[in-house]
Amino acid sequence: MKTYTATPADIDKKWILIDAEGVVLGRLASIVAMRLRGKHKATFTPHMDMGDNVIVINADKVQLTGNKRAKPNYWHTGYPGGIKSRTTGEILEGAHPERVVMQAVKRMLPGNRLSRQQMTNLRVYAGAEHPHDAQQPEVVDVKSMNAKNTRSA
Image 1 (tube, one colour):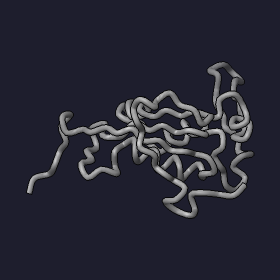
Image 2 (spheres, one colour; image 1 turned 90 degrees about the vertical axis):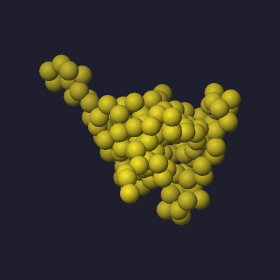
Image 3 (cartoon, rainbow, N blue to C red; image 1 turned 180 degrees about the horizontal axis):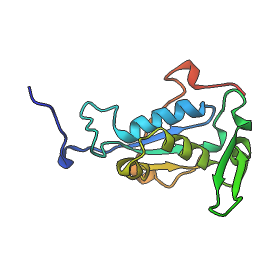
């Protein structure tokens, strides 16, 4: 029995639409990361971009458990004394709430060139509108997968 390795001709990319309203952030990010890598497919090959194109809408309505809204997110400007921070709640209520979902998904992928390429297949939108209707995305209901995926605020 030989090990199956996919070739570029074998790759079949679909478009997936996920509504993040009321879904717990970490559970959403793990499902999206799995879809981006292609691990849900029987033909998964670790060194190839096998994953689907994922569209996440309502990223501003994602839920966080515990005190994670108050958790600070740090970054450095590159200058001496240039450490800055903002809480996750401030980012979600700010101008770009989709960055919370993007960062969570990015951190669930391995840190290499392939995962950076796979992140280009992720589109996150704060509202319910998205410009990808022409691709006819298949809707994946993350809420109904597991009762723990949702949280009442």
